[in-house]
Image (cartoon, rainbow, N blue to C red; front, side, top):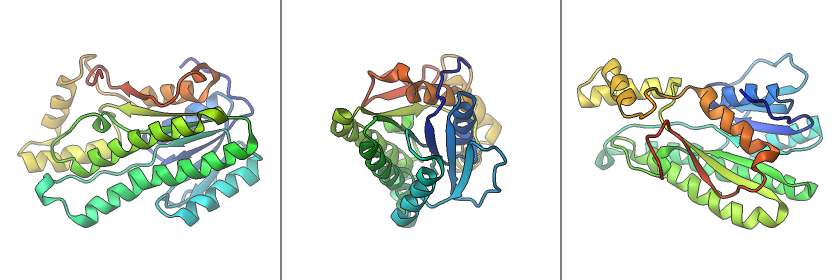
Length: 254
């Protein structure tokens, strides 16, 4: 990975214990940033001096404020937010349970809103700009069967990203979203099992189907997304805001 210098910068990464979030934490650290690693799971303390681990449910405003305060009090500032926490639920649209809909929207959409709002307030107060990076999905631009609540939540992330980008531009706070394609994470592997059963396919068949849809001939690994996170966190993206950047291997081109 081409490492852009983020020395002296402080980042918060939600969903930082696994998948894209974990890869983003490591990429930011490699480039010199200090990181508040946030996850809903209770995590052991990280021995590295430039990392603190925090447990929080990002759908709860009081927990979001508490974790933001802890990071700022520990490191003295906040420059970068990466909203990576996300969950999915699979069902046909006519069968989606209200509880499942609410749970997905709470984490994927409400969580982004609460974290972005809180981070923006700190950045505005500092008066030195900042970078807000929301992990949406190509599902924020397209429709996919069995993924109604997830698709809706990721469309919401893109919409909110654009509004915040407009409103925070005068403060030199860049707000962008990344739209990954099919990424090899535990969540994706679980979706293949559940979705495959609903369609009468095994997980291996679904994986082969996934790969066949990617023009570049492979699905993504979390590092593919983390590379773009680092770019958006760096000075090289200073003239970009309000974008939904596809990282899909060519699956989505709009």
